[in-house]
Image 1 (spheres, rainbow, N blue to C red):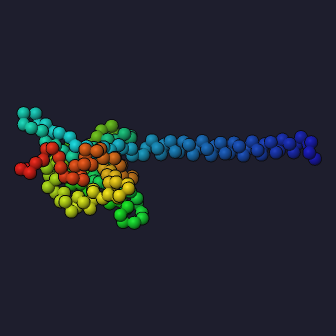
Image 2: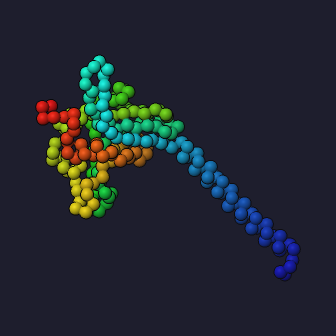
Image 3: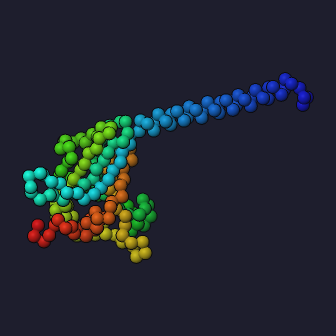
Length: 193
């Protein structure tokens, strides 16, 4: 019977129950997503060339630095820092990513390993420009940083911070640092050094 009130209210109740179940599922899913995103390890990274002054009147020392800042609510463990160049994670070798770990000899907070970065704090990993220039032979520099395609140009260079339990944090390298990584030439280093 199309006009039977019992059938109509039963159908209305079934639809309302289905809508209520979908709303409850959505509310639980959103709350779980919020909790998981709040508790995830969040970090920001940057790379640059900087000058370090001791403060006793001696000239400053130029450093290549990779900094990481904890912008989340959980501490995290930095395992290594390095570089990524290339265009794609798959495909022909000329386009594939290449990775290199950066050996650092100066730390911002002078703490030994492991490098645990607490919430709201940052840590830095540095190497002097002169040390990096002497360690970065022309063959390895050409293999890693100076790959170039005729139409596209030089491969992009990213600084990479590897953190335990999450994907690496990537930061695009600024132009002056990219030029130094590709050429090995910087104003602070001369043929006499």
